[in-house]
Image 1: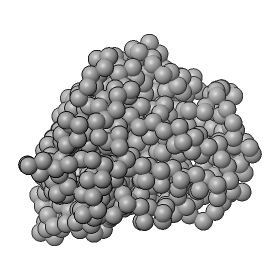
Image 2: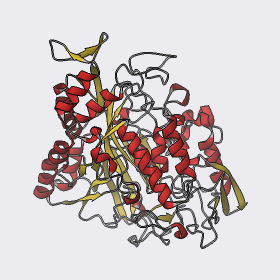
Image 3: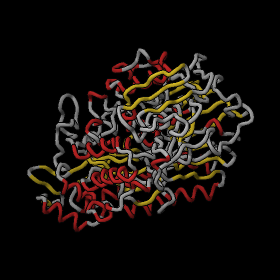
Length: 582
């Protein structure tokens, strides 16, 4: 799994043709979605059975911090546009993708004008209006709403109605990532449903678990942590779609049983996020023959995150409070030693099949040639060297005791290392624990159910980060700006923002903040590449994160009879569900 940021993966690389450079610029694709399969008759199919072994717990896509929740909301909620499988913007509610050439994008990239398709309706039959788009921006921009996707409206000065079917997004300066709020983000919520639940009241909205939308389906029943059932939205704009009369997303179980349900028994039509050890996955596929494995590579990275705050000290009713310092991760030499004791190669080979579902990386930005750094190869933090890691800790004054565990100044070098419940991840933990044991670290492993880990309502969640180390996957959009912003000081997750912002590590570095601020404004492609690489290199050299594997952004199973599925590394696995059929 991944965070919702990985689900949203949805930012178009918003650099116009006049700024094009190889492997960096991506131009909008024509509408409709390229390669989509036509569905001949609405409702001709029965129930579509989908397995998400990480069960959805929330359906408000703007508050969702986990892929499981964001994907479940995708059937209901839509944006003006999204990204197609080629990473280029395609339309949803918009009539066309705005460009400099068609006049939709200002030549100085300071504004974007979107025109709506005619006659749009919400699933309750009411008219979709420009006011709903403006309200969605206001909802996200209100800091008290503490929306997980709030960073996507940073720099948006205003959203204004040009007429009843046209909206103009104005940025406070030239913005090279001009699809930031549009194709990049964000799905539109209905003003009438949420107008009384903005700001501090946002978390209490009944619509969070029963949203009204414009997508191909509407909600029939939702049992958080268990199952979501959808029926056709009779007001959906395409009269021939969707094909399936009903969709069920069932949660629970594990990735291996989900894979078995598609590849061997055929009990499910589609299974998501099959993070199963490579040898087991290969055996399930070859012995069953009922389904196909879908993999796509982009920017998803399985990584370790080190807590820069103290998870054991309580301040103002919270642990890991941003003003506190971690008892030993505040020392870069210690962080580097931990990184040097991580055997990435073994993890990639034994668990990810050396490319079947993942490959070794030491960069946080992957899948974007113009932003991929070659500098990290020579960094200490990217070398597996137990002897050198031990020496670093020796030199830093952390001495081994009689039991082999290091201590300094009365502080014992013990870490609590948490991740989600997953046989693959537990095996990753075991490999990493061995390396850390070899350098004199006591390691306690913790496995948290995904519906808790990715729901910011529990001290066991990734957002609270009441541990020393945690591990999960997320990834960049085609434009890395918003992804890199996850480590900026402004987005530190704390009690006052309901732990909904993205900087779980409580990392704060003015130099890094300045790099991201510059990236938001720089329009020259070469300079943007340099800034992105510098930000990546700073995160790696400072050992803010320890990248492990560039994971397949899509690792799903599809029953062979299921047609119309178009794998997309840049959007939800269910992004084109209106085109699926049998």
